[in-house]
Amino acid sequence: NLIQISLALLLCCHIDACVSFKDKQVAARVTSDAKMDEWFVVKVINFDEKTKKFEVLDEEAGDDEEGGVQKTYKLSASCIIPFPERNDPSGTQEFPAGRNVLAVYPETTALYKATVISTPRKRKSDEYLLEFDDGALPQRTVPFHKVVPLPEWHRQ
Picture 1 (spheres, one colour):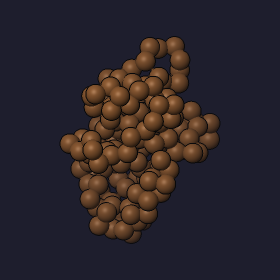
Picture 2 (cartoon, helix red, strand yellow; picture 1 turned 90 degrees about the vertical axis):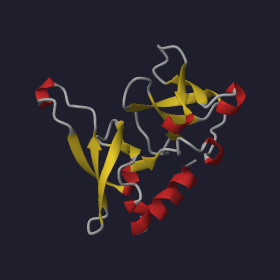
Picture 3 (cartoon, one colour; picture 1 turned 120 degrees about the horizontal axis):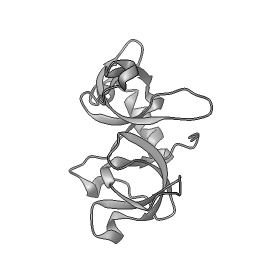
């Protein structure tokens, strides 16, 4: 939940914690558009101790207009949400049915708002059954390590 995000961000203010994100994939809000938040899976390249910003890489190549170049961003800690550890499902927060979350849409690197239909524990697996907010598509399964809390201020 948001308390855990806040605690993670507070911890992140500690230099060692921020540096520990290096080379890890995280969820990142890469736009500052007032009408929409865009979240993507990015890789942390570096943490600048002076500016307190993360340098992250969108590992997906850009489209043809961008010449297929991978983009980098400099983001504050408030734009970063660490994913749960893939190899430790027992140590992660479980979101109950009905909870709104951000989740990586299957076969993409984009995160979208979704509602939990069924938890990994109920499914006896390591996947959530989610209904993404567009409503037009069927419910999808997403691994627990690709689901994070939905920030209160999220707009989509």
